[in-house]
Image 1 (cartoon, rainbow, N blue to C red):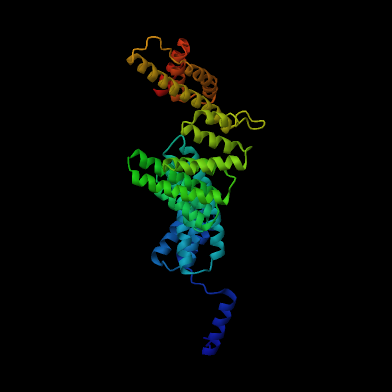
Image 2 (cartoon, rainbow, N blue to C red; image 1 turned 90 degrees about the horizontal axis):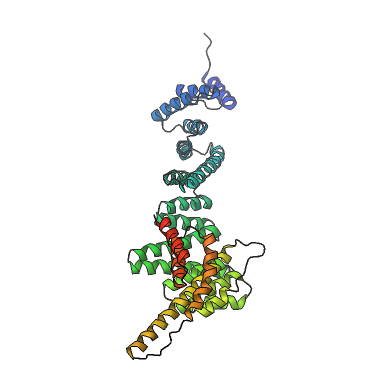
Length: 393
Protein backbone atom coordinates (compact mmCIF):
# COMPACT_ATOMS: atom_id res chain seq x y z
CA UNK A 1 0.00 0.00 0.00
CA UNK A 2 1.33 3.37 -0.93
CA UNK A 3 2.12 5.65 2.02
CA UNK A 4 2.04 9.48 2.07
CA UNK A 5 4.12 11.68 4.30
CA UNK A 6 2.28 14.23 6.48
CA UNK A 7 3.58 17.07 4.34
CA UNK A 8 2.37 15.42 1.16
CA UNK A 9 -1.10 14.93 2.67
CA UNK A 10 -1.30 18.59 3.58
CA UNK A 11 -0.30 19.57 0.07
CA UNK A 12 -2.98 17.34 -1.40
CA UNK A 13 -5.65 18.77 0.94
CA UNK A 14 -4.59 22.30 0.06
CA UNK A 15 -4.77 21.53 -3.64
CA UNK A 16 -8.25 19.99 -3.21
CA UNK A 17 -9.59 23.02 -1.35
CA UNK A 18 -8.15 25.45 -3.87
CA UNK A 19 -9.85 23.72 -6.78
CA UNK A 20 -13.16 22.56 -5.30
CA UNK A 21 -13.90 24.73 -2.27
CA UNK A 22 -15.05 23.40 1.08
CA UNK A 23 -17.80 20.85 0.49
CA UNK A 24 -19.79 19.54 3.44
CA UNK A 25 -23.22 19.09 1.87
CA UNK A 26 -25.52 16.77 3.74
CA UNK A 27 -27.59 14.05 2.14
CA UNK A 28 -30.69 16.25 2.49
CA UNK A 29 -29.04 19.18 0.69
CA UNK A 30 -27.74 16.89 -2.07
CA UNK A 31 -31.21 15.38 -2.50
CA UNK A 32 -32.74 18.87 -2.57
CA UNK A 33 -30.33 20.09 -5.26
CA UNK A 34 -31.15 17.11 -7.47
CA UNK A 35 -34.88 17.69 -6.92
CA UNK A 36 -34.48 21.38 -7.83
CA UNK A 37 -32.77 20.43 -11.10
CA UNK A 38 -35.74 18.20 -11.88
CA UNK A 39 -38.27 20.86 -10.90
CA UNK A 40 -39.54 18.78 -7.96
CA UNK A 41 -39.89 21.71 -5.55
CA UNK A 42 -42.15 19.92 -3.05
CA UNK A 43 -39.54 17.22 -2.59
CA UNK A 44 -36.73 19.79 -2.38
CA UNK A 45 -38.62 21.75 0.28
CA UNK A 46 -39.14 18.62 2.39
CA UNK A 47 -35.45 17.72 2.25
CA UNK A 48 -34.29 21.23 3.10
CA UNK A 49 -36.81 21.55 5.93
CA UNK A 50 -35.36 18.38 7.45
CA UNK A 51 -31.83 19.74 7.05
CA UNK A 52 -32.46 23.09 8.79
CA UNK A 53 -34.33 21.27 11.54
CA UNK A 54 -31.24 19.17 12.16
CA UNK A 55 -28.73 21.93 11.52
CA UNK A 56 -30.16 25.46 11.77
CA UNK A 57 -26.68 26.93 11.16
CA UNK A 58 -26.54 25.72 7.56
CA UNK A 59 -26.67 28.99 5.61
CA UNK A 60 -26.77 27.27 2.22
CA UNK A 61 -29.75 25.16 3.23
CA UNK A 62 -31.68 28.22 4.37
CA UNK A 63 -30.83 30.03 1.13
CA UNK A 64 -31.90 27.07 -1.01
CA UNK A 65 -35.08 26.73 1.02
CA UNK A 66 -35.85 30.36 0.26
CA UNK A 67 -35.26 29.77 -3.45
CA UNK A 68 -37.50 26.70 -3.49
CA UNK A 69 -40.32 28.42 -1.64
CA UNK A 70 -40.04 31.35 -4.01
CA UNK A 71 -40.53 28.99 -6.96
CA UNK A 72 -43.56 27.57 -5.12
CA UNK A 73 -44.93 31.14 -4.72
CA UNK A 74 -44.69 30.87 -0.94
CA UNK A 75 -43.29 34.39 -0.80
CA UNK A 76 -43.68 35.06 2.91
CA UNK A 77 -42.09 31.73 3.85
CA UNK A 78 -39.32 32.33 1.32
CA UNK A 79 -38.56 35.68 2.88
CA UNK A 80 -38.33 34.09 6.33
CA UNK A 81 -35.83 31.53 5.02
CA UNK A 82 -33.73 34.30 3.42
CA UNK A 83 -33.70 36.18 6.73
CA UNK A 84 -32.34 33.06 8.43
CA UNK A 85 -29.62 32.74 5.79
CA UNK A 86 -28.53 36.37 6.13
CA UNK A 87 -28.33 36.05 9.90
CA UNK A 88 -25.67 33.38 9.37
CA UNK A 89 -23.66 34.81 6.47
CA UNK A 90 -23.54 37.40 3.66
CA UNK A 91 -22.59 34.72 1.14
CA UNK A 92 -25.85 35.07 -0.79
CA UNK A 93 -26.60 38.68 0.12
CA UNK A 94 -26.86 39.95 -3.47
CA UNK A 95 -29.03 37.06 -4.64
CA UNK A 96 -31.35 37.49 -1.67
CA UNK A 97 -31.63 41.24 -2.35
CA UNK A 98 -32.80 40.47 -5.90
CA UNK A 99 -35.30 37.92 -4.66
CA UNK A 100 -36.64 40.38 -2.10
CA UNK A 101 -37.20 43.07 -4.71
CA UNK A 102 -39.24 40.56 -6.65
CA UNK A 103 -41.01 39.45 -3.49
CA UNK A 104 -41.79 43.06 -2.58
CA UNK A 105 -43.18 43.76 -6.05
CA UNK A 106 -45.34 40.62 -6.02
CA UNK A 107 -46.64 41.38 -2.52
CA UNK A 108 -47.51 44.98 -3.40
CA UNK A 109 -49.25 43.98 -6.63
CA UNK A 110 -51.25 41.24 -4.92
CA UNK A 111 -52.04 43.60 -2.05
CA UNK A 112 -53.32 46.30 -4.41
CA UNK A 113 -55.53 43.77 -6.17
CA UNK A 114 -56.95 42.61 -2.83
CA UNK A 115 -57.43 46.20 -1.67
CA UNK A 116 -59.39 47.08 -4.81
CA UNK A 117 -61.57 43.98 -4.34
CA UNK A 118 -62.14 45.05 -0.74
CA UNK A 119 -64.35 47.90 -1.91
CA UNK A 120 -67.03 45.35 -2.82
CA UNK A 121 -65.87 42.56 -0.49
CA UNK A 122 -64.45 43.97 2.78
CA UNK A 123 -63.00 40.57 3.71
CA UNK A 124 -60.34 41.18 1.03
CA UNK A 125 -58.89 43.99 3.15
CA UNK A 126 -57.46 41.32 5.45
CA UNK A 127 -55.62 39.78 2.50
CA UNK A 128 -54.35 43.21 1.44
CA UNK A 129 -53.12 43.88 4.97
CA UNK A 130 -51.20 40.60 5.00
CA UNK A 131 -49.59 41.25 1.61
CA UNK A 132 -48.51 44.80 2.45
CA UNK A 133 -47.16 43.68 5.82
CA UNK A 134 -45.09 41.03 4.04
CA UNK A 135 -43.74 43.70 1.67
CA UNK A 136 -42.48 46.00 4.44
CA UNK A 137 -40.99 43.01 6.21
CA UNK A 138 -39.03 42.16 3.08
CA UNK A 139 -37.82 45.70 2.38
CA UNK A 140 -38.38 47.83 5.51
CA UNK A 141 -36.55 50.81 4.01
CA UNK A 142 -39.21 51.19 1.29
CA UNK A 143 -41.41 54.23 1.90
CA UNK A 144 -43.98 53.05 -0.66
CA UNK A 145 -44.49 49.80 1.19
CA UNK A 146 -45.53 51.65 4.33
CA UNK A 147 -47.80 53.94 2.33
CA UNK A 148 -49.66 50.96 0.87
CA UNK A 149 -49.80 49.34 4.31
CA UNK A 150 -51.53 52.46 5.65
CA UNK A 151 -54.27 52.05 3.03
CA UNK A 152 -55.20 48.61 4.30
CA UNK A 153 -54.94 49.67 7.93
CA UNK A 154 -57.24 52.63 7.35
CA UNK A 155 -59.68 50.37 5.50
CA UNK A 156 -59.72 48.15 8.60
CA UNK A 157 -60.31 51.31 10.69
CA UNK A 158 -56.94 50.88 12.38
CA UNK A 159 -56.23 54.61 12.36
CA UNK A 160 -53.40 54.35 14.90
CA UNK A 161 -51.65 51.79 12.71
CA UNK A 162 -52.23 53.84 9.57
CA UNK A 163 -50.85 56.93 11.28
CA UNK A 164 -47.70 55.08 12.37
CA UNK A 165 -47.17 53.63 8.88
CA UNK A 166 -47.54 57.03 7.22
CA UNK A 167 -45.10 58.62 9.65
CA UNK A 168 -42.62 55.85 8.81
CA UNK A 169 -43.15 56.42 5.08
CA UNK A 170 -42.51 60.16 5.47
CA UNK A 171 -39.45 59.53 7.65
CA UNK A 172 -37.99 57.35 4.89
CA UNK A 173 -38.99 59.80 2.16
CA UNK A 174 -39.32 63.38 3.44
CA UNK A 175 -41.81 65.35 1.37
CA UNK A 176 -43.72 62.23 0.31
CA UNK A 177 -46.80 64.07 -1.01
CA UNK A 178 -49.30 61.20 -1.06
CA UNK A 179 -48.33 60.06 2.43
CA UNK A 180 -48.51 63.62 3.77
CA UNK A 181 -51.99 64.08 2.32
CA UNK A 182 -53.27 60.80 3.75
CA UNK A 183 -51.82 61.55 7.16
CA UNK A 184 -53.79 64.78 7.27
CA UNK A 185 -56.93 62.87 6.28
CA UNK A 186 -56.26 60.38 9.10
CA UNK A 187 -56.13 63.22 11.64
CA UNK A 188 -59.43 64.60 10.35
CA UNK A 189 -61.04 61.15 10.53
CA UNK A 190 -59.82 60.73 14.11
CA UNK A 191 -61.34 64.10 14.95
CA UNK A 192 -64.67 63.09 13.37
CA UNK A 193 -64.74 59.80 15.29
CA UNK A 194 -63.93 61.58 18.56
CA UNK A 195 -66.67 64.14 17.91
CA UNK A 196 -69.20 61.36 17.22
CA UNK A 197 -68.16 59.69 20.48
CA UNK A 198 -68.56 62.94 22.39
CA UNK A 199 -64.87 63.03 23.28
CA UNK A 200 -64.12 66.73 22.92
CA UNK A 201 -60.57 66.48 24.25
CA UNK A 202 -59.62 63.79 21.72
CA UNK A 203 -61.33 65.71 18.94
CA UNK A 204 -59.41 68.89 19.67
CA UNK A 205 -56.13 66.97 20.00
CA UNK A 206 -56.66 65.39 16.56
CA UNK A 207 -57.61 68.75 15.06
CA UNK A 208 -54.44 70.24 16.53
CA UNK A 209 -52.37 67.54 14.82
CA UNK A 210 -54.26 68.15 11.57
CA UNK A 211 -53.75 71.92 11.81
CA UNK A 212 -49.99 71.61 12.36
CA UNK A 213 -49.76 69.10 9.52
CA UNK A 214 -51.72 71.07 6.91
CA UNK A 215 -50.16 74.40 7.89
CA UNK A 216 -46.71 72.96 7.22
CA UNK A 217 -47.93 71.35 4.00
CA UNK A 218 -49.43 74.64 2.81
CA UNK A 219 -46.20 76.43 3.68
CA UNK A 220 -44.31 73.97 1.48
CA UNK A 221 -46.92 74.23 -1.30
CA UNK A 222 -48.65 77.65 -1.02
CA UNK A 223 -50.77 77.18 -4.15
CA UNK A 224 -52.41 73.95 -3.02
CA UNK A 225 -56.17 74.43 -2.77
CA UNK A 226 -56.72 71.02 -1.17
CA UNK A 227 -54.71 72.11 1.86
CA UNK A 228 -56.74 75.31 2.14
CA UNK A 229 -60.03 73.38 2.05
CA UNK A 230 -58.71 70.96 4.66
CA UNK A 231 -57.59 73.81 6.91
CA UNK A 232 -61.03 75.40 6.68
CA UNK A 233 -62.52 72.19 8.12
CA UNK A 234 -59.85 72.11 10.82
CA UNK A 235 -60.20 75.77 11.82
CA UNK A 236 -63.97 75.55 11.94
CA UNK A 237 -63.71 72.48 14.15
CA UNK A 238 -61.38 74.46 16.40
CA UNK A 239 -63.73 77.46 16.22
CA UNK A 240 -60.85 79.49 14.81
CA UNK A 241 -63.09 81.61 12.59
CA UNK A 242 -60.60 84.43 12.16
CA UNK A 243 -57.91 82.04 10.95
CA UNK A 244 -60.27 80.51 8.40
CA UNK A 245 -61.38 83.96 7.23
CA UNK A 246 -57.81 85.22 6.83
CA UNK A 247 -56.76 82.02 5.04
CA UNK A 248 -59.52 82.09 2.43
CA UNK A 249 -59.70 85.87 2.00
CA UNK A 250 -55.94 86.20 1.52
CA UNK A 251 -55.85 83.27 -0.91
CA UNK A 252 -58.47 84.95 -3.15
CA UNK A 253 -56.71 88.32 -2.87
CA UNK A 254 -53.44 86.69 -3.94
CA UNK A 255 -54.94 84.84 -6.91
CA UNK A 256 -58.49 86.01 -7.77
CA UNK A 257 -58.67 83.75 -10.82
CA UNK A 258 -58.04 80.58 -8.83
CA UNK A 259 -61.31 78.63 -8.84
CA UNK A 260 -60.38 76.50 -5.84
CA UNK A 261 -59.56 79.55 -3.72
CA UNK A 262 -62.77 81.26 -4.79
CA UNK A 263 -64.80 78.15 -3.95
CA UNK A 264 -63.09 77.79 -0.55
CA UNK A 265 -63.86 81.40 0.33
CA UNK A 266 -67.49 81.05 -0.77
CA UNK A 267 -67.89 77.87 1.25
CA UNK A 268 -66.45 79.54 4.34
CA UNK A 269 -68.85 82.49 3.98
CA UNK A 270 -71.75 80.06 3.55
CA UNK A 271 -70.84 78.27 6.77
CA UNK A 272 -70.82 81.67 8.48
CA UNK A 273 -74.35 82.27 7.09
CA UNK A 274 -73.13 85.26 5.10
CA UNK A 275 -75.37 84.18 2.25
CA UNK A 276 -75.08 87.18 -0.07
CA UNK A 277 -71.27 87.20 -0.01
CA UNK A 278 -71.15 83.41 -0.34
CA UNK A 279 -73.34 83.52 -3.46
CA UNK A 280 -71.18 86.28 -4.92
CA UNK A 281 -68.01 84.19 -4.70
CA UNK A 282 -69.54 80.80 -5.53
CA UNK A 283 -71.06 82.37 -8.66
CA UNK A 284 -67.55 83.29 -9.82
CA UNK A 285 -66.22 79.74 -9.67
CA UNK A 286 -67.39 79.00 -13.19
CA UNK A 287 -66.71 75.88 -15.24
CA UNK A 288 -63.32 74.35 -15.78
CA UNK A 289 -62.22 74.95 -19.39
CA UNK A 290 -63.67 72.15 -21.50
CA UNK A 291 -64.88 70.16 -18.49
CA UNK A 292 -68.56 70.46 -17.60
CA UNK A 293 -68.29 67.61 -15.07
CA UNK A 294 -65.64 69.36 -12.98
CA UNK A 295 -65.95 68.50 -9.27
CA UNK A 296 -65.50 72.07 -8.05
CA UNK A 297 -68.10 73.31 -10.53
CA UNK A 298 -70.63 70.70 -9.40
CA UNK A 299 -69.96 71.45 -5.73
CA UNK A 300 -70.31 75.18 -6.37
CA UNK A 301 -73.67 74.60 -8.10
CA UNK A 302 -74.89 72.52 -5.16
CA UNK A 303 -73.75 75.10 -2.61
CA UNK A 304 -75.31 77.94 -4.58
CA UNK A 305 -78.56 76.06 -4.16
CA UNK A 306 -77.89 75.56 -0.45
CA UNK A 307 -76.98 79.25 0.02
CA UNK A 308 -80.18 80.50 -1.63
CA UNK A 309 -82.30 77.91 0.16
CA UNK A 310 -80.84 78.64 3.59
CA UNK A 311 -81.11 82.36 2.94
CA UNK A 312 -84.75 81.94 2.04
CA UNK A 313 -85.40 79.81 5.14
CA UNK A 314 -83.71 82.44 7.34
CA UNK A 315 -85.78 85.22 5.73
CA UNK A 316 -88.98 83.22 6.22
CA UNK A 317 -88.14 82.64 9.89
CA UNK A 318 -87.67 86.38 10.33
CA UNK A 319 -90.89 87.08 8.44
CA UNK A 320 -92.80 84.64 10.64
CA UNK A 321 -91.30 86.25 13.73
CA UNK A 322 -92.43 89.70 12.61
CA UNK A 323 -95.90 88.39 11.71
CA UNK A 324 -96.26 86.81 15.15
CA UNK A 325 -95.15 90.04 16.85
CA UNK A 326 -97.71 91.98 14.80
CA UNK A 327 -100.44 89.53 15.75
CA UNK A 328 -99.60 89.81 19.44
CA UNK A 329 -99.56 93.62 19.11
CA UNK A 330 -102.98 93.52 17.47
CA UNK A 331 -101.86 95.00 14.15
CA UNK A 332 -104.65 94.08 11.76
CA UNK A 333 -103.21 95.55 8.57
CA UNK A 334 -99.77 93.96 8.88
CA UNK A 335 -98.47 92.78 5.51
CA UNK A 336 -96.24 89.70 5.69
CA UNK A 337 -92.87 89.92 3.92
CA UNK A 338 -92.92 87.28 1.16
CA UNK A 339 -89.57 88.16 -0.39
CA UNK A 340 -88.13 84.90 0.94
CA UNK A 341 -89.89 83.11 -1.91
CA UNK A 342 -87.56 84.79 -4.40
CA UNK A 343 -84.60 83.13 -2.68
CA UNK A 344 -86.38 79.77 -2.69
CA UNK A 345 -87.07 80.16 -6.41
CA UNK A 346 -83.43 81.08 -6.97
CA UNK A 347 -82.32 77.90 -5.14
CA UNK A 348 -84.46 75.60 -7.27
CA UNK A 349 -82.47 75.43 -10.55
CA UNK A 350 -79.20 74.93 -8.69
CA UNK A 351 -80.52 72.06 -6.57
CA UNK A 352 -82.24 70.45 -9.56
CA UNK A 353 -78.94 70.62 -11.46
CA UNK A 354 -77.10 69.19 -8.44
CA UNK A 355 -79.56 66.28 -8.32
CA UNK A 356 -78.29 65.18 -11.75
CA UNK A 357 -74.84 64.46 -10.30
CA UNK A 358 -76.03 63.56 -6.77
CA UNK A 359 -78.86 61.29 -7.76
CA UNK A 360 -78.23 58.96 -4.80
CA UNK A 361 -78.23 61.74 -2.19
CA UNK A 362 -81.38 61.19 -0.12
CA UNK A 363 -80.93 64.41 1.88
CA UNK A 364 -80.78 66.43 -1.34
CA UNK A 365 -84.06 64.91 -2.50
CA UNK A 366 -85.61 65.71 0.85
CA UNK A 367 -84.49 69.33 0.51
CA UNK A 368 -85.97 69.44 -2.98
CA UNK A 369 -89.23 67.99 -1.65
CA UNK A 370 -89.54 70.71 0.98
CA UNK A 371 -88.54 73.38 -1.52
CA UNK A 372 -91.17 72.24 -4.03
CA UNK A 373 -93.75 72.21 -1.22
CA UNK A 374 -92.93 75.78 -0.23
CA UNK A 375 -93.35 76.81 -3.86
CA UNK A 376 -96.69 74.95 -4.13
CA UNK A 377 -95.30 72.47 -6.65
CA UNK A 378 -97.26 69.55 -5.22
CA UNK A 379 -96.56 66.80 -7.75
CA UNK A 380 -92.82 67.48 -7.85
CA UNK A 381 -92.72 67.64 -4.06
CA UNK A 382 -94.32 64.21 -3.78
CA UNK A 383 -91.95 62.71 -6.37
CA UNK A 384 -88.90 64.14 -4.60
CA UNK A 385 -89.99 62.79 -1.21
CA UNK A 386 -90.74 59.38 -2.77
CA UNK A 387 -87.24 59.35 -4.25
CA UNK A 388 -85.75 60.19 -0.86
CA UNK A 389 -87.75 57.39 0.80
CA UNK A 390 -86.53 54.86 -1.79
CA UNK A 391 -82.90 55.80 -1.19
CA UNK A 392 -83.27 55.50 2.59
CA UNK A 393 -84.71 51.97 2.47
